[in-house]
Image (cartoon, rainbow, N blue to C red; front, side, top):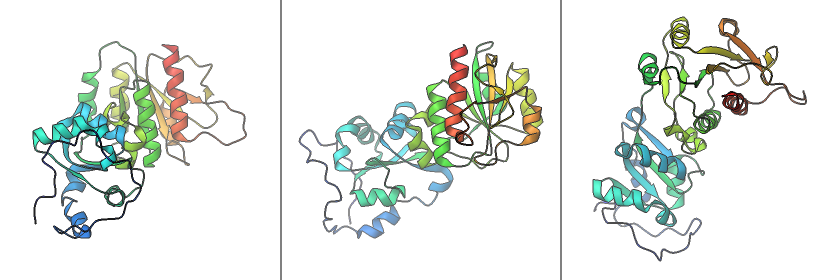
Length: 287
């Protein structure tokens, strides 16, 4: 049957032009449908993440190449991924040139941008370990995500967080939010730049943050102080509420600041990802 994974160096120049959904050639080694099942490791959902998107895969390769387990790509993506493919050959990591329909199935999305990779998941840091990584006395911002669940919003938040140099994304103890392939693609590489942090009990987490010099700011659709007129501390945690429901009222009351973004009133509010970018930009410009 043969090994379908490439172990030779990537082709040189002269690749054929990108072909959108070319006719499939018969594969005598294995039926295409069976190959797709074989390509999904049994334990991938527990220990690996199926990541897709060119910038997302480039970011993993740049920061933690040893996490890469398999790579699937279109032939037209070989020039853009030559360093990664050469590394795969050297490290005996399998890569396979497939057709677009195969990537659609592997990613469960048509937004894969010509590459899919299976990578080892990273686990969130415990709060105490994360706090010890922060330079003492230096300005820092973090995001406490209170019920955010949409993967595209999460990806956009990660992208903004990376852009503004956020120190960490704080996840409640019982939160099921985790990095997904969709979130990593929307983050455009930001998922590799900002650590995820797992908090303990809410009261304990808030106390730990305050002991480290952070103030907590509730972000409210209405009723908070004008963000653009407020004095923001150098160490700040924005608590961002869930899409639609907003943040927990008791948590908002326990925060040191309550902030809102003024607007025209033509719409009820910005969505959580857009609001996060505004809040972070305002913190950054005050430094």
